[in-house]
Image 1: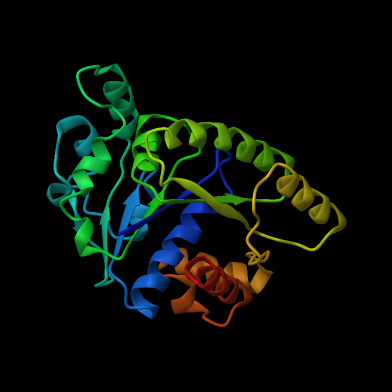
Image 2: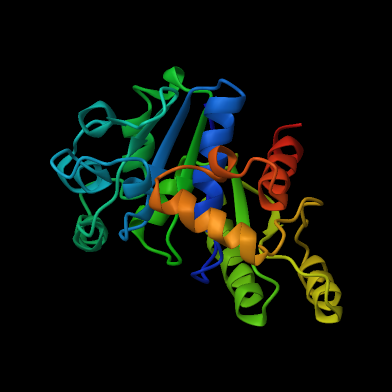
Length: 253
């Protein structure tokens, strides 16, 4: 099972939207079995996937020792199963950090071992934070995708993320930063300069970029969100949808 984490310490860059659309693309267009893990306490991806609030979440794995199968849920898409998130992750992060009787960073990795053979890919939507649930996600991750806007604040989040990933690489040598994905791209003069700044920091930029959505595309994106659908179901020929497809092809080529 190939595990990919979408992350940036800056919020609002589009991690959740892109990761859920990627899950749909891999599952429905490429016919791959996908495990999606929502690691953000806001639970936006969980709601999009149709989470049952009466079932367990990632919180139960981290705090209660639940197995992955105990909390696994079926989405509206046959090839996508998921582990939901909830606000309990706030308490879970404190609880795990305070428990010195366990290997705090390997709880999720150990829990996933029993189901990893069932899936071709695992996508993890991470919060704009560094805490025990993120360390647990990175401990079982192969490739990190840093999603960013071409803004100074977002680039600062990339720099900080590198140091945290370096810490995790000491006990997960498979972990690597696959690249930086620019979202909401517009071809203005400052964009080229900010792109160079990212590359000067030693990061690889994906050739694929997710374009800034036109007003019409934004309406389709909002409609997809309301209806809990992907952009590929609502507007498959939108430029944004084509950009995500190109990114997926570049990532898995």
